[in-house]
Amino acid sequence: MNSADVIVIGAGAAGMFCAGVLGQRGKRVLLLDHAKTLGEKIRISGGGRCNFTNRDSSPSHFLSLNPDFARSALARYSPADFVTLVNRYRIQFHEKHRGQLFCDESSHLIIQMLREECLLGGVEILHPVEVRAVIREGHQWRVKTDAGSYQASSIVMATGGLPVPAIGASAFALDFAKTLDIPIAPVRPGLVPLAFTSDAFRGLESLAGLSLPVCISAGRKGVRYGASTFDEDLLMTHKGLSGPAVLQASNYWEEGEDIVLDWSAGLDLEAVLNEKLVGAKTTEGALATFLPERLAQAFSAKIQLQGKKWAEISRVDRQSMIRQIQHWQVKPAGTLGWKKAEVMLGGIDTDALDSKTMMTKNFPGLYFIGECVDVTGHLGGHNFQWAWASGYACALAISA
Ligand SMILES: Cc1cc2nc3c(=O)[nH]c(=O)nc-3n(C[C@H](O)[C@H](O)[C@H](O)COP(=O)(O)OP(=O)(O)OC[C@H]3O[C@@H](n4cnc5c(N)ncnc54)[C@H](O)[C@@H]3O)c2cc1C
Image 1 (cartoon, protein in one colour):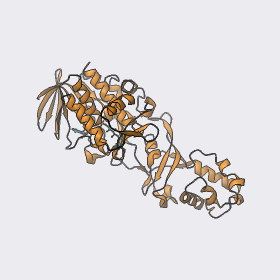
Image 2: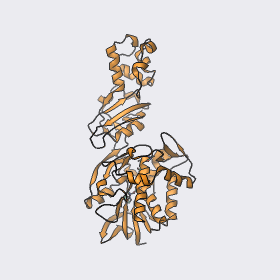
Image 3: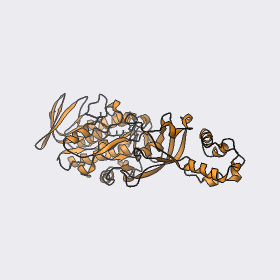
Image 4: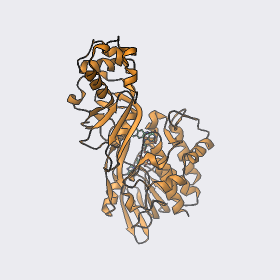
């Protein structure tokens, strides 16, 4: 077809879902993507099992310069709605941790389901195709590609964010927005491991591979997305820190700031390290009652108390050690960047969009959905929930 009611650009999570709903609500939809294989981010998500939503997803799990923006869309398409769809396709899933729902088998099943939904809606999918220009012509939009020129009254931008460029991520939505003077909230990698200088990490270099529950805090009140604290697992790596705790904190961390770690994950250390209980143990033995042995060794070596009996250590030294363990303040050197990030923070400024429809306020018929919008979820299925919810809000508005 050379003309459609709607052209959706980007056949990832948000684009495929939105196109399927539009098609099933009677719209003629053309879905374009530059990738050879569709839904690559879905395929690699959740370690290949796609954490497709979170039962407990709520607006408090999202970051945006306007924290209220996502409320309306999230309220209209809930995690339970997506679970109903997944059940209809008999995709088996399980809850892994704190409401996170994963496929039992493979994330391919979610991709197949979205393709099937598009098929049911008669959506025409064209890929790989290079989109060369999107031009406004009166009340219509023209999309010029290397495979021809197409016209529609609505355009949905669903080209995602910048993470993992190797599988087709591009700045297409952001670059296009700039040509129309649509504002953009500054972008940076999110849900990403943090790197450290060797100084900050001295004494802990040998702990790569170690994983343990911690309590981690990052960010500052009043700055960008504010501050937050997470109780999750941390993973030591050769380059720095990773694991769910660090990925969550990275969303709030700003360049140049410290993060604060409580390696005891909130234990009452005065009670745990009571002299009656551990007084006869060496320092590392006392610490190993609640820390992995390798970390207990590293900490006691770091403050040169290795081998000393806990009962023989001065009160001042004990308190200094407890403070180091519970308030380890360190400045990350940076993140591991777009290659390792799971999401993009920032994007199309929500001030430019109607929160009920995802349509731009100044360009009738032009919509942005999914990750390219300045709405970013916590780790745990919230980012896909935003893809479904923003795609649904847009599809309902166009087909109303
Ligand atoms: C390693 C990894 C694991 C993740 N795991 C999870 C998880 O388990 N749960 C969760 O909720 N979130 C997860 N995410 C985040 C999630 O994948 C994204 O939030 C989600 O895919 C965003 O959906 P989207 O449709 O906006 O973008 P995408 O799914 O990225 O889709 C964008 C589409 O646009 C196409 N495109 C890009 N540029 C162009 C262009 N110029 N022309 C035409 N087409 C273009 C791309 O090829 C792609 O098909 C993970 C991300 C990564 C990187």
